[in-house]
Length: 407
Ligand SMILES: *Cc1c(COP(=O)(O)O)cnc(C)c1O
Image 1 (tube, rainbow, N blue to C red):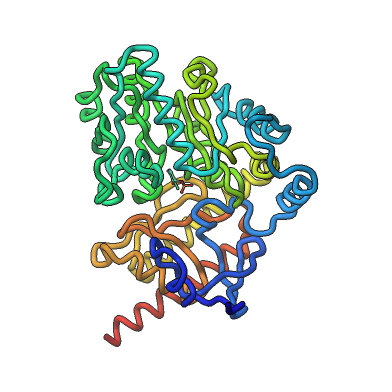
Image 2: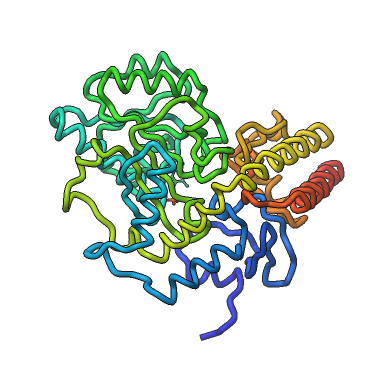
């Protein structure tokens, strides 16, 4: 067995669900990381909205190391101090009164959807089982969550599929009004559709969803897996919307790179999931919860809030300027450090090509669907790192223009 691994090894030994970049990152610091060849990259992707404090943050390292010396895992036959502290923190910081811990966004949503079904069944009867969600929504990759998600291609070929799910156009109040009835147990939405193109829910739509859920006694579930943990300028995006959900899911940034997810709700609704109704072996394990507590300490600080605001403006201004000058994309939409720049008409379907050109020049950004460049950097990204990343992107766009002119 060879001890060196290269990108070619991926083709040899990995299930081909992904098509990773040709380079392999090996080390990171702040919003910069290095590949196997020692080349550095500016990280505008944040591991897809996960590395909220960048790489190798001292407080997270300290929390991880301290907990690692004490206790890694005990199972849910015992509770543990880091999990209890994290649940207390999350319930103090949000509308929620109860937490359920798991290991990913999909698992948090799976718990929320199972809760909604059981809540409908227990309180109103088996007819109350319809889940309403929206076109282009993304809720994870388990069978239930791809089916609730609004991108049919992710469920294709996996039939038979779970039933009782309806998809409506996003931000269409009339369509939601028409579809609501007393068989609906939940309406689930992302405050900003992340994978769907960084598309914010309009305030009218969010308010209408809240009012319709109240009228038809359905749960309003906010999937804040991507919008949460400070990315949009508040700890959770719902805080800016004047709308409070009944159930909220969070994951991605919650562990700053350590896998953890949570489903949060009120005490009244949480009663539905009595002893034995749901569970997870690793969910709420001490290591993950200790790191998440350290993440929350940092991202709730005024310094981080101020940095998100300043870096958001810097990045927005810089991208708008690059868009004007090079003409590949338009000014970004979104909030805080979750931004999406739509490509111009002639570049529809080719956001991925711009992402690849940027990576070549040493800046890593994301796409959200075929038509949007997505930026989800760490909340503590520095002014110099943003400036460096924008300069590299500038060079990448110039190179792309030269290639086009030559072709
Ligand atoms: C990433 C994401 C998920 C899925 O999270 P996983 O940790 O990959 O399971 C669910 N919902 C939203 C909004 C996401 O962005």
